[in-house]
Length: 295
Image 1 (tube, rainbow, N blue to C red):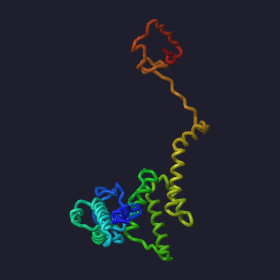
Image 2: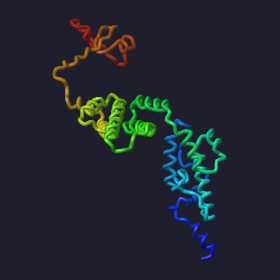
Image 3: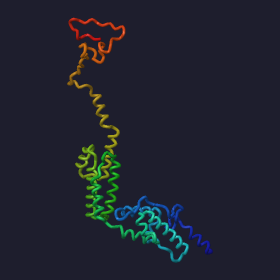
């Protein structure tokens, strides 16, 4: 096999190879919809970037496991191209202020390491503000699904910041259970007052359900209420109940004119004021009850 054929074979890499680039993998691509601003959102940004690079099979270019070939110039060129693309993806996902400081960098893994060393710091004020936001979040008439999703996003961010232990020892299990109980309380505290009976029922369970199970229970209740609104139920029950036998029948007072003192009409329709209609024959007044005559 000649050198030209060997070069062609080297250039046709399988898509599973980290040096393989799809036609859509261009340097102007933004692989995540998030900009790194600094310490406050580094953990979310880094997790999003790692996931996106894993999908692209390019995590080796940020952790240093994919190295440039020193023996094969074709593979070395492919590595340089992939490195430049990954570096562009990183720069496309950071704020303008951070971009200026990294624009002259050449190696993607070095930029990744520098960003991590600079911004991967646990700021207690960030944890405090996030914890306060979690505890002040309420349903406020929104759907149970939207309310839970908002809390769950903040819980995930909080867990990433405090970095709970991932071992399976007894202490780690107890800490995880305690964390789940705190989330359950936070979820129940923010529910609308309409769910107070169900909240009391959940808190009386032994053992306490997980926050996911509590969410499922309250979601089912929300669905039942949507299918059978309370207002419609009360109206239907009132209609089928019939009249209350204890209630006295309403007696309507007869109309009486304050001008002529006759019953059956009011002053605004009194013929003596508005005029008698044509061919009207006035009834004779009874000497016994003049006020009981009607027009």
